[in-house]
Amino acid sequence: MTTEAATVLEADWLETCRKAVHGLRGVLSDHPTSRERVVETGTRGEGGDRTLVIDSAVEDVVFGELERLHAEGLRFCAVSEERGIVDFGSRDVRVVIDPIDGSLNAKRGLPNVAISIAVATGHTMADVQFAYVYDLGPGEEWWARQGAGTWLNGRRLANVPPERRTASGLLELVALESASPRWIAEGLEGLRASVHRIRAIGTIAVSMCQVADARVDGMLTLWGCRAVDVAAAQLIVRESGGHVAFPACDTPLGAPLDLAPHSPVVAARTPEGLADLAMIVRPR
Image (cartoon, rainbow, N blue to C red; front, side, top):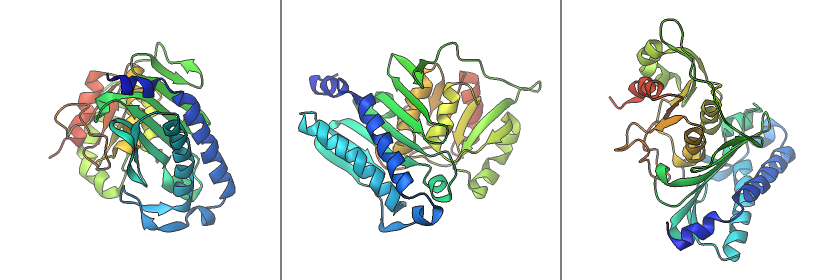
């Protein structure tokens, strides 16, 4: 790790993320109804989706914090769903941001809406060093540091329960995202072969975090996901003792930290569970 990267990691990222959560709360409080939350800016973000006013407003809060850190001498770049890659002096250290993961939930007034922030000292998922996800619905704060474990609402996750399977060997409960009926239809045979029950929460980051505390036995997306959706949550799972893979990439954690949807993602409590889920999304 370079001296520059080490310096960035020494910053108080947990406090920075908490300030961003305060901003998210404020934006949604200022736009309490579905009618207000569906308003678009008229542009598309660098991630390809139409930008909502609430997306832009929360991102402004996050970037205000990043500008403060840069003014203090830190060098990095930001990878954000709306603004794309923004240079703050270095392309080697990356801050990967999804200001609102679960935008459709936010628009419709559904409770699970998250902010996701990851800090990496390289260009792939394997390089993520710090991860933060806050789920506004239940008010749950998940965070992790590489090599130091995962924390949920101030409690370090330890002795996480094992995965649960039915008598016939199916994973008892699995979270499912990218839940378009067309993609579900394409994955239906694999789901029937490996999964007893599914849950669709509506945010990739929150769904994956559930694996970290064994609330679900695994999680998968049925379509390619972007780094902004999953960079933080995948470290949260791994530091809890779980397993993560991006099956379309050359290595399990080789998905790049950019804006393209390179691969579906699977997560599980065990290598066996991971293998079962990877077969469902493996490129055919």
